[in-house]
Image 1 (cartoon, rainbow, N blue to C red):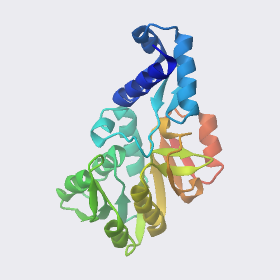
Image 2 (tube, helix red, strand yellow):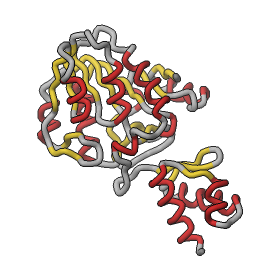
Image 3 (tube, rainbow, N blue to C red):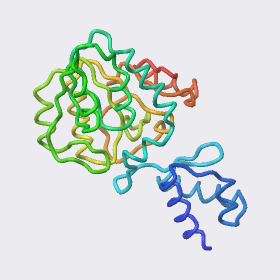
Length: 253
């Protein structure tokens, strides 16, 4: 197998499984672990994967993005801890925005069930979840529904958002880095998130450690736009401190 073909297979596995392990790949491909590491370095240099200790995971780009169904199977315990910590930051907020994605969906589940809230969201699953609560008033943003995330985008969505002033926004991203801020592969999604940043008084980013140090296609916010970043403890404390120097409090759970 030629190097290019092997790298294509490695990337396909990473995208299908969510991550790859050097030892397992070496056994499957019949090559030395160092050969796999070299292939991963090449893929990382081209922006396709982000290497970790012992493996790698795929970087989402304008041509590749994981589905909502896939996200519900990855790092669920970490996402639940992040969601619980996010719900504790509600404070006296009465109007909140909950972003698209699985972690924001878990935040919606973690909100106090009897708290009177007006919730704005582009996410169909989140809207359906909260609409069942008598204490919640849910405003679902209209627009084109993206099949991968079951969330609305485009000018209908941003037009509705432009008329709101929100107390608090829970925002996700495909990547977050100190160099490029918060990014997402789709320009239409980026525009919705940008409008949310403009509309909200307080902003909280919630995401697992694998999103850090990753940059996608469209930047929609800077690190300093957020008062708090919540992630899991797999993000090194030293790296969390570097992000905190840009303005937000960083909570590792």
